[in-house]
Structure formats: structure tokens, C-alpha cells
Image (tube, rainbow, N blue to C red; front, side, top):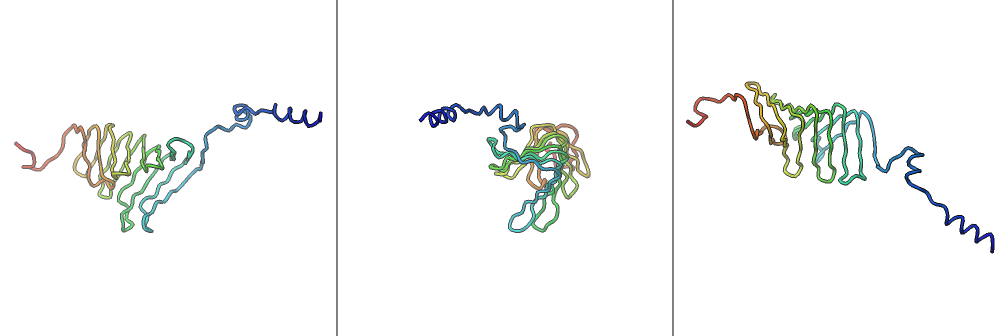
Amino acid sequence: MFIPGVLFCTICACKNDMNEIKALTGTSGRQEDVAEDVTIINSKNGKITMKAFAHEFVRNSAAKPAYIDMNGKLKAEFYNDSGIIESVLTADSSRYYEAEGNVLVWDSVVIVSKKGDKLATSELVWNATIQKFFTEKPVTITTPTEVIHGTGMEANSDFTWYQITHPNGTVQVNKGEVPQ
């Protein structure tokens, strides 16, 4: 009787402090998958829609909301249905929110379209629901004939249409296009 009683008291007295375990093992409470020099390929109906390349890949599925960070010279190529690159995005960092399909890219963001138009900004948001890019930051759009500056912008997925919210600077227009 004595031995089972001592054994029961000893087992009940054991307690692990999670902070002490984390300090000893060097692990945090975050559940992250980490990889280097990653290529991600998205496809739809058997056709490639996007390829993304990044030096650092971090996926945190335990976060609320879950996300994927791609950092260190991110490059994303966007393809049309014929497999031709429509535009290329480069940036230093990005965060992809898996559940919503939304993407935030920041630091040295540049998009170049297949016709040569170039967007440069410090931050850009991709809204997957409406398939558009947005920013409230300063932007510079360079085309073969002009350079347009402004603050805030909205653009479609292949960057064939865009609207600068608050443009500034000189914009070239053809005679008769501006109302009197």
C-alpha cells in the first residue's frame, strides 16, 4: 500500500513549465516551415499561371491568419494562357495570406509588363477576390513615351490597365484629348 501511494504522489507532483522547455530546447511556440532558394509554380487547368523565386521561404500555418513569407530578392513571373510571360514582379519581401489568396509585397517593388511599362513603388497589395493590385504609396510608371508620378494606384493583373489616384508631374496627351 505504501509503495503505490508514494508512486501516485510522485507522478502527480511532476509538472513541466513550457517556458523552461522552450528555453532549454531553443524552440518557440510558432510552427514554421523554413526553406532557402525556393521556386513555387502555380497552375490552373494544367497551365502555368505564375512562377515565384525567393531566397528565403517561411510558412507559418499556426498564425492567425496563416501566411507565407518570401524574402530576399523575390521574383514572380506571370503567364497568359499561351504560356507567355505577361509581367514580372520583383521585390525584397512579400507575405502571402493563404486563406484569402491576398499578397503584400514591399521594399523595391517593380513590375515590368510585356509591352515594357514599368511600375516602381515601395509597397503593393494583390487582392485575389477582385484580381487587382493596389497601393497608397508613391508610384512611378515609366512607359516608352513618358514617366508618370503619383500617390496611390490600382491596376489589373497583367498591368495592361492602371489608374493613379493622385497623379502629379507632366503627362503627354494627344491634341484634342484634353477638354477645353
